[in-house]
Image 1 (tube, rainbow, N blue to C red):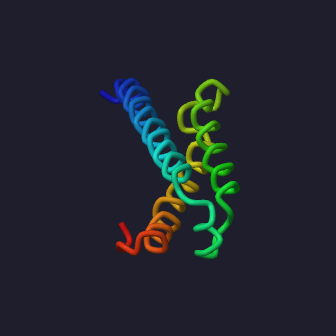
Image 2: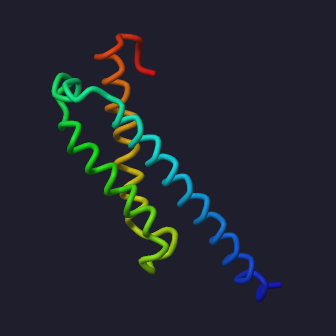
Length: 108
């Protein structure tokens, strides 16, 4: 019974890693597409970095996330997790503020 644990552990770890990696890709794509369609003058109006800086951060994170399995770091390398943090900051902090400043329709 004890010898069977490593076999299940490896397959479960692989599936969880794939799910987290795909989640990071989807989160990055949503962040990037939202940032692309926003007005450039709205970013300085809310007191954050410019649109170009956000596009570079999100695009670079998305690229590193997409390439992380090919680099040899595995699905759960450090790059997808750092990039997920950048995506989350954009979606949870910048996006609601932009929407409130541009539309005036609340946070979401």
